Length: 279
Length: 355
Ligand SMILES: Cc1ncc(C[n+]2csc(CCOP(=O)(O)OP(=O)(O)O)c2C)c(N)n1
Ligand code: SF4
Ligand SMILES: [Mg+2]
Image (cartoon, rainbow over all chains, first blue to last red; front, side):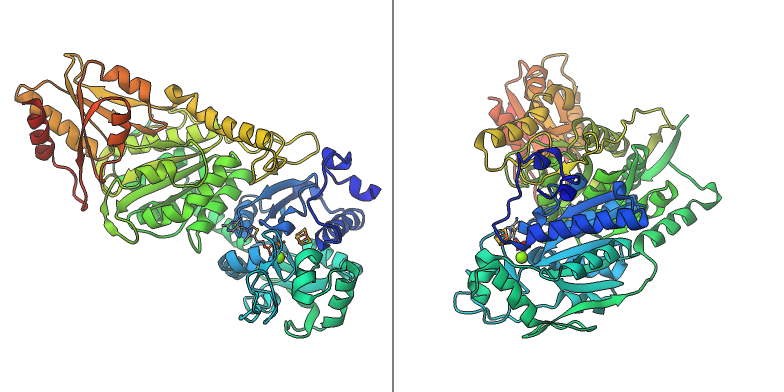
């Protein structure tokens, strides 16, 4: 095991008594590695305080990414990670709250919370793992699945057009939005670092391979390395989100506006002015 | 020193919650629980707490879970339809042992039902509404003063047993104005807030699948899964006599008939007992303060010698079944439509039973 990563693991994972649940060649394990490297670099470069980290996950294969890590981890219900994370961030505005969620979790069952969390600009950092379908439940269509794609619940082809999470986030006023793809390690790690240092809501969508279902059925390739090659073929760097035959990747927005937790706490302080405290 | 004050049930609930140390409220407007949110929005920031109006009830209960896990005592309040939406979150808080206060101000009917009318139709949903096997604590206040104290008790129980506790009230009590005593700081006991334990330099792991004491997922192991679930169930079941309370009146002369009720219906039940006694009938009074876990032994002892229990309630006859399971002869007085059972109605039914 990589000794750098080992330092960040719960004892049973570090000792090899427990393993991640991912299939061989899955992008989830690679993203876990990127996340640890980003934190490790930030700690050395910027004195990033990882003791203030809370990680909230959705339910899905990708919701298992941070489980081996030593941090405070809350496995939320399917679709509700952003709500739980908002609760944490409001009562601990000085903490760093990161969410790992799948495309089904964040964009389908949890879609309403995504809209409102971005609108409020809650200082939560979301890593959206987009494998273009539901991995955990065995390869069903998701809101990100390309049109006409074959999945276990669209055996005659997907009748629905996909949703561009980044375009949605930008339109709602998200203050940091980027999309990268698992084969581009440097960009992914750099983006996670930016996300962690960002003030306000941030979304990093990571296009990731699910060799078992997405590879085999949606794109018709099951070798993980070949899926990554395929991803590099269908993506192009741009400063505008687009999700069609070509998917644009890159950083789409990065700016600041007052955060929900800042505004909330200023309201609390205002309400308490003049000692009008009532129990 | 505390003070006396005339207030609406909803305000008493809010003041009780703040007294108990609740500092986070998340909710979505719904009749007849809206006043709880509105009083909270006013009073909570002044106590240094945070109020959020969420996009829906799913967000509300999950935000409250996040706040409770991270730092503060947290609560939600809702009514029928919103209570349905919160059910998954209630089970999640049970499984991850997150203290939480959940208030359901009952209105009538399935679906959108009767928004402005009271009922007691959610008593089984409060007990069985979430999926899976579990036990839960449900309290049922009978008047505004008790609403205040039971709110504090509910928060204390949730901290002691690290589990969500449901305060089940009705439109009637939430909208009723009564004079109550509000204790001064420190006068009524309040437990500290419990957050998940960490180990050494390892943070907590709050797993939503069945898990062992360290948070590791054991869902694929039948033995460990059963162990995990039984522990959650037993921590409530084995403490029923510590958790659950009833009120008994007019029992000294060993009446053969009791009127047993709870919440606002118990007010009519008590009035009926008094009328019957005035007319020379020996009738006892029993009121459930805790609905769940159902205090079987305490009830059995209290009504020893009685042959019949008459149970007025504002639903199609739910809690009456629990009395039936105790082997008692029961008479159900179910009431639908939004009106309370009247003392006269109960009076004549009991008179019929006695003659
Ligand atoms: C309320 C609810 N509905 C359905 C499920 C079943 N379920 C578990 S994970 C999942 C989809 C996961 O897909 P995604 O979020 O894309 O994550 P992935 O497994 O692909 O990483 C579903 C539908 C659930 N756990 N809860
Ligand atoms: S099913 Fe797909 S997404 Fe899930 S672990 Fe396996 S390869 Fe990864
Ligand atoms: Mg997915």
